[in-house]
Length: 271
View 1 (tube, helix red, strand yellow):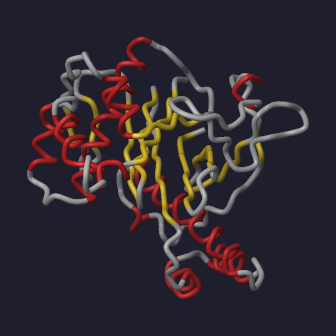
View 2 (cartoon, helix red, strand yellow; view 1 turned 30 degrees about the vertical axis):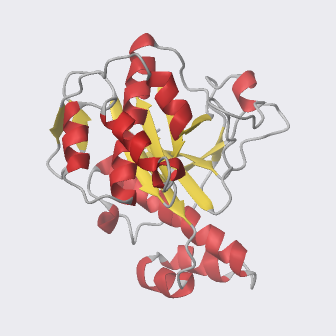
């Protein structure tokens, strides 16, 4: 199975001095539909995130077609300038989209699936050979206990209550579960409404045999290709660890990343 993960820090787009010039360069590097969508948006963070997603799709599709990398677990991290430099001199890949019954987008002419998410200062893009859902959530200090009582399953709400008095720990668990719900809703195409009451607490641990020791042993570096190690993936056996949940008779395979302070990232696919 092919899975590639990309993360873009969009804060350079928001820079008062250089942001507009970077946005102008980005418009020249994304596909036509993505560019038109961004032009219809008001200037600001949402437009920057839309263009950032378009840039990540460009590099992700190029690598998927060339099979540059496979399921190596790490997330490739980029700044805006690094990503634009990677795409400089290359005409945009022409991308066409179709939409499922619930509005989930798909590539019309490519044998790959994709998922996009943005929160705070980051955009997440995942390209896969199979259906996948992905989400990034900024920990933004909401009343997590109240939200959990309203939207979470009984077991999830109980787990949050048992997390202790330390707010940071409780908030981290809440957003970890919320990212799971968003990712699951995007996997199915039905959105988070269908996932709110579902119990998505982690289940059994699994060790996918196709994950390389090199990927599992990767450490954080700098610049493009910096690896973020998923939550709990390091293990004594030198492999990689993921979690599963069974829901509605289907086995869901989860992957979580917590290498960015104040954010939770979850990927979900059928296992």
